[in-house]
Image (cartoon, rainbow, N blue to C red):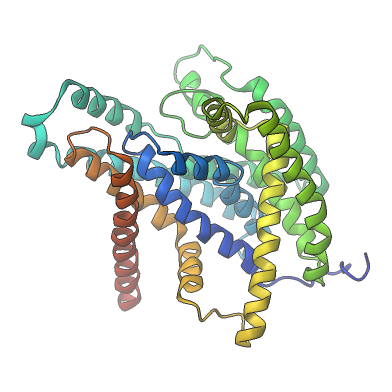
Length: 371
């Protein structure tokens, strides 16, 4: 173990494998949300992609967020608290953008709406004004990390608290709090409602494990051997997970879809363990691929346009995430608030990739000129 780990923090640079990992899953998000944001039925291929993505997806972003708090420059409790406030504000600003995208096309289609279209419009506006998603849960988790940092909690306790939270979450989820205002706030944190996509309750454990893993990673001096050793238990867990899943639900893809979809947003302890195994295995695979490419290029800076784009996604992930859904909502509105056929959703995903790219890069260039 002395060959792999150092007593001092030696691995303190960028962890490229996680940068690429976030970028790769931004592409999955484009596709999956093309169906979800437009109320469209997924085709078989999209369903299988989604079922695969349920073992990572949002968990990747929260895990890497926790890891990033160990590697970032702004790591005081005050920094975390400010980050929490900022992310919660982002959520509700994004919600306003969602509703604007839904309502602005309304005058152009108002005279052509079916009863189903009118019902969808009302439901979407009500839900997305209050929507709780990745920005909100990230903000709340930042507050928790700020508290733990302020209390000088030892790193081993992050992992232990993560275990406890992942075990307890299914028993706490949906607990009603019949107190005005407080009950609504608790619903955002631990409750179930149509406008709650993810709750901080279920995803806190991923962030805590990310902090724990990031602290360990800073002491790794031989990442190649580290990932080779780590891959062994991860591969075993992944194989066992999918073997158990297919043995239980494999012949019933509809139930398999339902179970994986539910456990994705409400993961229990075993799902968290399996998700972490998937995430770390993906990271290991990307590390070795990047290592081969770096040796070939003679530098860690990628020459491949796709690799560069994935890193750009990672750098500006919040902007891409915030912008891509309003593109779908605008398309949904112009389609008279009714779902699309599956091939149209695939085309919408491509459209969103192009539109968000133009907006994000255009905005960044304007900021660079002003700066």
